[in-house]
Length: 303
Image (cartoon, rainbow, N blue to C red; front, side):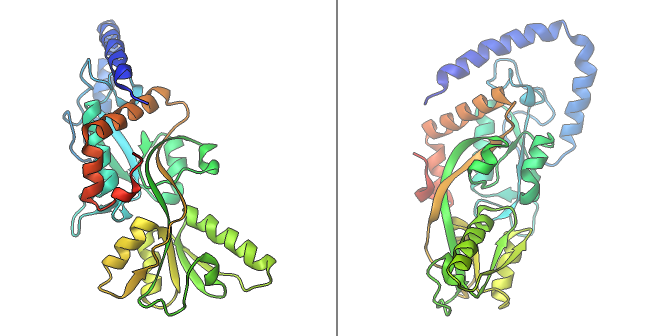
């Protein structure tokens, strides 16, 4: 679906908003206070200056969440190459960061990435601590009951093991009687639970599951011998293997491949339409494929 016509419609709405603002001057002080508070937070540049109201006529002007000129994105910034901090800095980078900035440019706003624990990401979104989730979140039925999504990337689950795969692990149920480490709140937790249900029904030893707040903590269990495998999204597993100096390897699986989605509150209908339009514009411009190629993730393209 294309959204350029929708963007032109937003421009007309934005003009109407400007007229209304003339008659709402008494609210300027409140808006100015909101902008100042936003400007004090740490964000990534893109588009208009932080804390500046969205310019009239921009695609975001008619979107309530974007009228302060900032698109706030909740992200668990410890999941390379999807989102992570540049070594030794607090500068976020990765697929989600670049894509978020590109969409913000299309909308004429700036981004603010709010580092948030993955397990609490949806509650934080519904509590309005940020505008959207952009954090390698797989779309599934359970999450769809709570929030809406705009799909932007495809990935499946892979397993990280010691180099040489000494335990001869070829799939999740091959971890029977062994220990798997995983990040809490991820789809991999559910996959391990389903595998244990199958193993129990078959009278086989279950998998000992260790959960951690962040993926790097799970990987450390494998490095130190406390775990026999780590389950995570395939691009992350491959990155962990590549960064291990030959100590670890990825099995090269793509178990239950599914799309990542930008998470949006169900009542944020105008914002969802704006995000859909911005993503389509990034795709149409060719920047989407360039971002994927930059992070060696072209295989996950939704195009």
